[in-house]
Image (cartoon, rainbow, N blue to C red):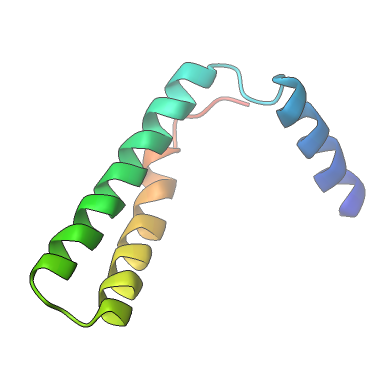
Length: 73
């Protein structure tokens, strides 16, 4: 398992793991900004900071697999 992780990390840093890196970065940025907007929105509503971080992290974490479902490796 460790060899597989190491091999995947080497391919990722060489730029050969993901076929369409532009699409990957676009989807990643979309998920990041949705999470950021949710965090800022919850903090502006004067919700407890720990709760705002927890909720935005959970929503962003549940959103990422949906955004990355079409990524070709």
